[in-house]
Image (cartoon, rainbow, N blue to C red; front, side, top):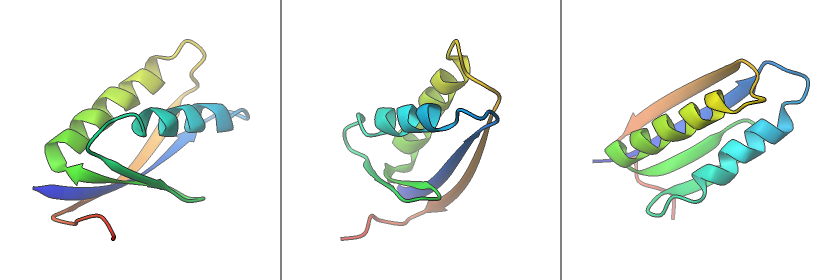
Amino acid sequence: MRAAVEISMYPLTGEYLLPIQTFIDRLNTHPGLTVRTNSLATQIWGPLDQVMTVLTEEMSRSAAAAAAPQLVFVMKVLPGLAPPP
């Protein structure tokens, strides 16, 4: 089943841009996913199990980074939604 996930990452620190950009850049390296970013969130389209596996891996990597602050992730999952044309 295809799905769309909208995710926002909030590092609880004054230096928030680099951790967010690093997370987004890593999401863009996974083949088979469509990733689009706007000023509020990142949308990811693909097979639901692949999207969730990638998000689990990348959220874990972000949280384990040596200089990582406390992170908050907010997600919306929309099963059955194909990417826009």
